[in-house]
Image (cartoon, rainbow, N blue to C red; front, side, top):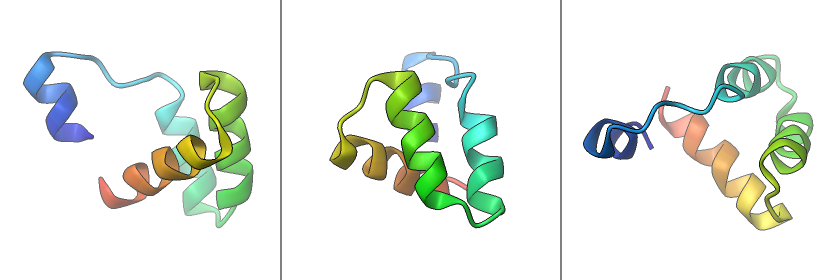
Length: 57
């Protein structure tokens, strides 16, 4: 994800920091729910988004 934002000059989504904090606190399910609500993602897309944030640490 970081490579994509750098390659295409796209800024990071403002919600990402809040999602990383939830992940850090062990609240991955809540992070997926927040990502889905904020970004309009499906359950699978939300889970994949959170997984990408976890890998990008």
